[in-house]
Length: 213
Image (tube, rainbow, N blue to C red; front, top):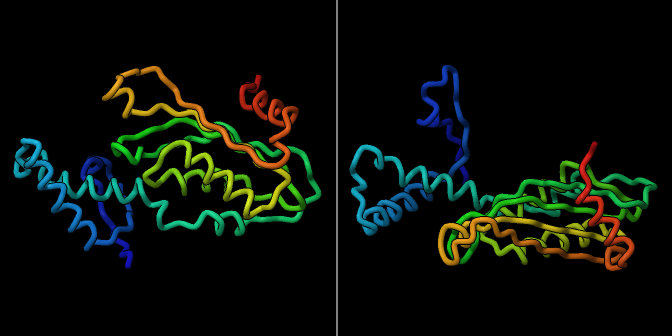
């Protein structure tokens, strides 16, 4: 279903030897582009003018990239790098960059995720935690559900003694439109197991607030 196409990004034509390789369903790109061309006309633009000729295709490719999480399996990512290990203290990966799109206005929200778990006989490759965040972030989302999905995936797959997730994001649907509050930050959290204890949760929150010297 997905075809591999070697395409040179027109915005990087001036970089000698640059070739960008993307994977897209050409039929889907064509269908999406036709709709976006109509949208440009409906908002009062001329989709035939030079600067907009390739815009529908670019938007379509960007949208597929930003929603690629629908095609990915977060549990498989975790199980691909699970290792038996006699370690039962907190493992924390913090300051994971988050880029997602609000499902209500399809405007971006972005920030950082902090994810921790307490192993129960198994640990997972550290790079897999940010990949799991990306799988769920690269979908149309609300921050509350995104937080729960990351927590539940790690809990259900690794069966740890507890999982803690905190996400802090800025939402362009609040700063570009609506209430237009540019400096507001939304924080969500979700916990299981040992992180439901005040002592462990406090340790987690202190660690994500700390900065390396």
